[in-house]
Image 1: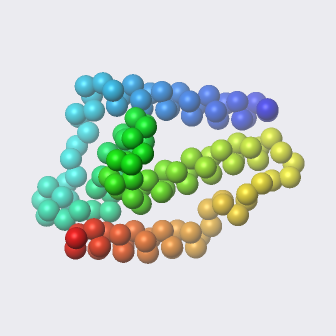
Image 2: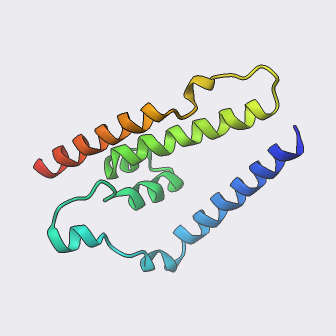
Amino acid sequence: MNKKSIIIITVEILIIISLYIFINSNYIEIIPKCWIYQNTKILCPACGGTRCLINLLKGNWIEAFFSNMIFFVTFIYLGILNIIYIINLNKEKKVAVWLYPKYWYVIIFAIFLIIYTIVRNLL
């Protein structure tokens, strides 16, 4: 492993440990509630995103999925992408580069986000 990979992995582990400590402390109550939902009673695309991350870090995958499905898939995608990036730092022949973000991924994500938000508020 090269020096850059070790630094990236160390920073990521420290961030995850810090998040886990924060989630299991009393400071979790300082996270503000969704302003859009409180004022309009409409679920914004990010409503449930914090609960999703908290449940993922606690290992409650099913609860995380149902908190916000789009965020769940996004967190899993970014985690897999991160692992592939670290692997590719140490290899000459890159693997799974088709997973790297492309501009049309953002367009597809935005379309799914809009559909998800509309369906979620209708049900």
